Amino acid sequence: MKTSSISTLSFFLVLIFSISWPASADEQDDFLECLSQTCQNYSSISNVVYTPENSSYTSILEFSIRNTRFMSESTPKPQVIITPEYESQIPPVILCAKQSGLEIRTRSGGHDMEGLSYVSQVPFVIVDLINLSEVTVDVDAKTAWIEAGATTGIVYYRIAEKSSTLGFPGAICVTVGVGGHYSAGGYGAMLRKYGLAGDNVIDARIINANGTILDRTSMGEDLFWAITGGGGGSFGVITAWKVQLVDVPEIVTVFSITRSVEEQNGTGLWYQWQYVAPQADKDLFVGVVVFRVNTTVLVNFFSVYQGGANALVSYMQEIFPELGLVKEDCTEMSWIQSTLFTNQMPIDPLDTLLNRTQAGIRQLKAKSDYVRTPVPLDAIEGMVTMLREPEADETIYYMVPYGGRMDEIPESQTPFPHRAGALYKLAGLTYWQDSEAADTDSYISWSRRYYEYMTPYVSSSPREAYLNYRDLDIGVNNVVGETSYEQASVWAKPYYKDNFDRLVQVKTAVDPDNFFRWVLGFVFWGYDHLQELTQMRVSSFVWWNLGRSRKKGLNEIFKKG
Image (cartoon, rainbow, N blue to C red; front, side, top):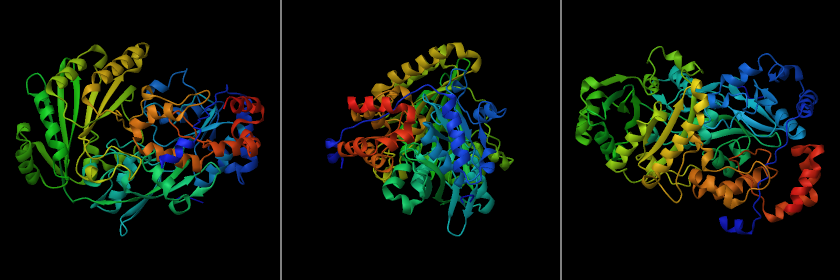
């Protein structure tokens, strides 16, 4: 490693300070000057500091963007990008950002659906963890330390280098960065057997708003709980995860079967799948992707089974004979090869997993839901009808079955609450090409109409959503002024349900000055704490968070409060 009771909340005055000022060269200059004075060896960090004047700035910024909707000229750009090579280079960045009035966005893989890891409406700095990607595997202990800038593919490859019978229940998409993936839960093809990636984290390293590097022992169990499903960006910069590896067989079996809606009863099989996949043995994962090719709607069933082909065929004929699976549909392979298969990539060469780039990136709007009662057949037929509309030519419906281990883990064990009783996660992913950017509003409008259509058929009170499929349509904090607890709950309850209240308490304790703030971030100050802040700590708060020129704005907020 390169590491050198909600009852009390009723008495709280609930505030979020998310204040916006226009960017200025002074902030950037102040930040860079602070770095030069704070870093013991500035020359070492100066090589990983990029400003808009640097010739590599644009390529560094765009390399990890996975949604080209946020590559436009109008998208806010960072004042500075830092790509640290060592954990010890990050604390000065945090302290100098505070002093110069800049926010921090932390990026690992860049798959954030709304670009929140590299976009902000206020002046900001990106800490891009791309150079912190080392994975250290301990086969005997069945553990691994994984730096937060590693991609899922790198993790899988490094595990397979050491053992053919160990794996990890991470993402299906192998270019996803582990920093955001693990901190929001993180599902994959082994979730029914082993739960989420976050369920298998046993330690972590995080740098808090004071620039202090903490592990699980020093951060405490409340903060550790918060970052294993609550999102890391509200609490600090996570630099590494220690995970418990899981056992995988020497041979797993995969299949991918596609049936058309028009001629092969694809709709009926899709409907029947809802009753089968969530109830199946933990060793079996069968996901569904529905998409359109020209005017034909296709339903693809893809599977990874922790065992041999004969056993899989026999079991599928028992629980889902309508699919008609035969042995010729199946391929036996190693677990590491299956990670490429589920990502629709050739299973050789394996070192493809080390590639951070992703082919075919384009503009995207995501909607996620949790289905707790099977969607009626006529509603599925309505989904197919919507898929035939012009704006849905590249849209996919993506379904991931739950059950198994996910039914066994209590909702409060981590901040990720979508557990027992959830049949599957449903996502509507609407894509369009950059050449169609002028029609972006029509595609986003279609995505919203789809979401409205699904309302009667998915979870409610709250309507649940998956944090790693962030959707700002659900709600956001105010960019300017205060955000009440009730307003924040609109977006937070879908992601966290009742776990939101504990996250509020953790945020209040670990980052009371709300340095790590973003549109889906937590900061809720109790009345007593706010009094203390206004009476005793205004000067330091102003200096660290707003800069000396912003005292008037802060005083105005306190007067309103």
